[in-house]
Image (cartoon, rainbow, N blue to C red; front, top):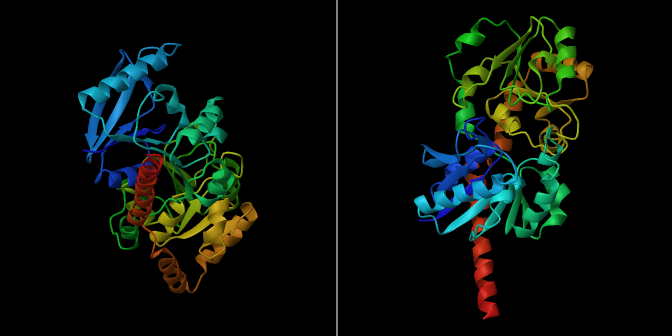
Length: 370
């Protein structure tokens, strides 16, 4: 049995995104342990919850002080002993996990850098230091988009841009689905919708401005609100915050939108993001309006698949053009052609090949050394 220990800053059940898509596929070749960021609990312990073949590990410690990392190390040692984990690789989504995994002896170390975490609000000040260390230790590094790859490509000898992909069949349901969720049914049309985490990346002012300019348009926001106070969000009769929804539910909501939105502010926390929702919206058959996020502009904006805007005026112009577009069928055929080679299965296969090549290289080095 081969094991994969993934150390992540994200709770498995928070939002279904890149880690879930990839690791559920890697679970066909490895027993995957998804180890979440440690939390405060009543005792030093860990809990293992199995979902779809993934062992989700919740680490709990009583206090956070100078002894915490040592106690977390002990918990991980116990986990490895209980499940008889010997032949394993380590997969990192957060460099901060090096604080309590430095003494592990994995066969390989993988760093999947899906975001520039150091630019996020409340990022630990020592994160960059640990990332430097992780770059030194990692056998292979992946980035979640091309702009992040350009920023990091000179920091590792074996680094690859692996943009997030799509489950076309899942989001394609939005094109034919007939069932509409109860909490969206009463909202009028036209509808402009966003799904995702609402945090410091979300363009609050843009939403405030366009909702005021076009009070007859209905803005639907789906997702958890984190790291910003809900009172800071714009409030209006045509803005509807429906809260978090499961991954399975998303196509039912998108099906009844007229336009899908990528409402990200242009700031340091969004400089290198590659929003997974871009191809997901397109797979659902929805026209997309986005701010000028680099990894949306190229390739989607430049290919004419997404309307790129720079403020509320251009937003309104783009939306009105979409509403009056006489040839949506041609646009949709172009979208489908563009996305035909994109899938999480293909992304997994590419990453798996690259990871397996690391092993081959190491064997050759050992043979040469001998």
